[in-house]
Length: 395
Image (cartoon, rainbow, N blue to C red; front, top):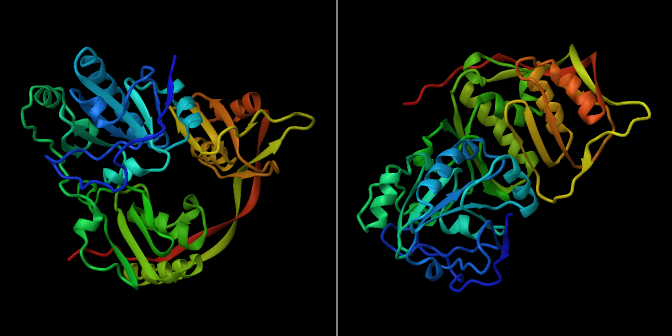
């Protein structure tokens, strides 16, 4: 049985502590904790005497899901020792509890609903793991796959550790002493995650002032700029997901509205890649998603406010998503665009299972499990054709 403990108050949360090896670990500002014994305390005073492994993750993060078996194995190995594993996410309890049915996580699961713990530990990419010794001292932060049993054993006996991906003094306020730019259009080859601290595909920024994309393909930028789905962009292979040629982008301007952001992006793409492109409509073989006559669809109105979805090889679980999640999943399976003509608006919960060895089985799965039809058809779809683009070389 999974326990949820509300954390009503924590002492010492007025300001974020500097993240520095050898200094006291920043406070844990958790609103709830799942799977912990009743009455458990979650301040560093209450946890004193225990080595603590903090895992920062999310249900939507595929890399986080990949690390669950590794961390579960470590938790089992140290279950009878003074070691606590706390997996921290900033998602809603209902989403996390649904996820745990499919992906059990050993140890405790902390909910950082206001994101203050993520901020205190300068977490920009997920998954990220922080290590804290038995005296409450911060000992390092890095990738979970590099947390070893040997490192935990050393922490238990008070030995120094060499966490391989140590990010000393990571907070941006310390690394960036200059003011933020008033105007900027920057496109560069993507920096390593270990340097930037940002997962590929992450979007960050400050509303009305700054927009940043980390580790993205050219076709992803074109889809954003031209409002054309990425699978309908005809571009050189080096700019597609077939190749791992990734870019970081930063845009800044006073009063950065969405329209101005897209205009800056277009200008940057044209100048950086010598880009020339045009849109054109093409009759395309598609699947049309439709409601079945006199049949109520088996997608349920969302019960949670926060949304997420995860796919375990032909077994997708969706929580509080639009039907675009379904059409995208079907489209990826069958290799065709899926056009939603159901008229169903809002957010829904659903589960769908199909045989990945037979991608077409998803069509029958949608019919029998969700009571919706997928009908082959032709529709005029808009494509973006890249007439010219040059892959720039770094200096």
